[in-house]
Length: 416
View (cartoon, rainbow, N blue to C red):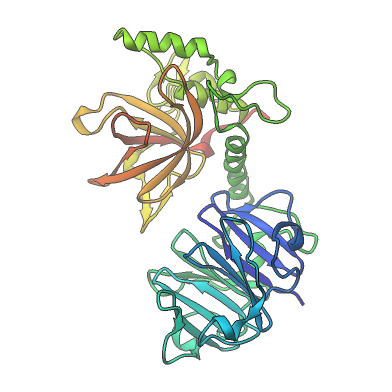
């Protein structure tokens, strides 16, 4: 029976292999991407086409795939296997089990771990050799993990690791160095589309309900729209397949709009950037009922705004665990103040959260690019913290902006 092999490629995508197939998994969306599984031979040139034993991404830009007593080195940037492989494991991995690995994983401590049967070996990445005193018993070094015959092990960007065996998995807290309570749980929670299955929402916590899955689906639909419509700009419009306009045009922005606002800016008059209009256009595409009331924090003309309607979350409710921001979540509408501290003057920017970690946030938004140009793209913002408040700046920002709060996407309705 074929087993699962797991591999985190970067902070946005993971890959699961089984038999002669693989599935790409979206980490932020917490579900398998559409259009999978596909054959390994079609997507991984130079890799074993069936029955991979273990796989791991090395910090030097190489990935390694193991099968039997051989391994293949894969160049991440070139997206293909290196020439001259496969080679014997014994020739390239001093002190590692020489055949039939169960699992391999790179840990955040500069070590890699290789598992076989009921034993594991610790490998020092810097010195490129196994540490002395190994192998050791899994039960002696991994509290709460399956004690033998793992299928896969993988470190997730949320500070957790996952261990797979058969039809179950265990979540492991890296900081606490032990398995979380309530595990193992069925691997079916990941909804991997092998064996004729279909992609579905991965509800990680026990007791997840259909309602939770529906909310995650709403968020994923927003992230899918971002992938479809961004990036684009006034100077270099990108029209998605099957559409007649790019996102800037849908937002009501043309080169003439950009020129007009540049003249106002140069004259010291009140001018606009495109962030609010791009957000409005994204909500139209997402089919939101909230459009007519979008003065984000306060009271809008014609009805209550986000705060009055109970959609707005103050920044005091931000939740962060370690380096991972738990709330706001991907898909939420982020509101930044124009400046920081006593110098802040109202709303300075709005965008859609794509990913948030302690030191960097990614937002999908308009407003980038110097007038008369304007862009709509995913922007990476460097973050520093002052008294628990995230202060952000991107390469295009003139000054830092602090988080005011966010609109909870789960509370917004859709018309279709």
